[in-house]
Amino acid sequence: MSDCLFCKIVAGEIPADKVYEDKQVLVFRDINPKAEVHLLVIPKVHIDSLDELTEGDDELIAHMMRLLPKLASEQGLTEGYRTIINTGKGGGQLIFHLHIHLLGGKGLPGFQ
Ligand code: 5GP
Ligand code: ZN
Image: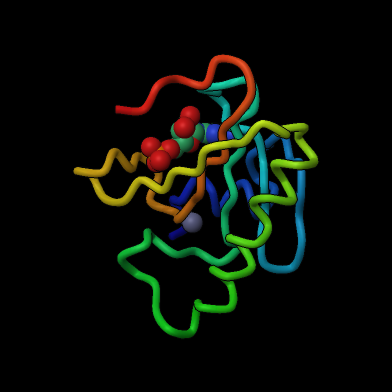
């Protein structure tokens, strides 16, 4: 966990372009945006991936889900947005700290 990039962002050891923060969650801009708006929504506690979730995380996950439309609205994504969670190497997960990608606006790539 000490080697986790996103934990270091939560701890303030690595800078990030933060757009929202509360007790449980941090939201910042992806360093390599795939669309005009590309946010990463992460829990402040370290959770490797969806695979590690337990019943004890239910309130946290619900909180993250319900935050998404609010963030999208604040970012001006009135036409809609896309959310992605990559899980495991086969799912394209590169950073093993659970995160939800929130994408929208110009340049949103197709999804096949
Ligand atoms: P994954 O493939 O794990 O779902 O996505 C990881 C995301 O983290 C990628 O979109 C990548 O651009 C982003 N990322 C990697 N390193 C950093 C960083 O140091 N800062 C920020 N803001 N984003 C990062
Ligand atoms: Zn972490």
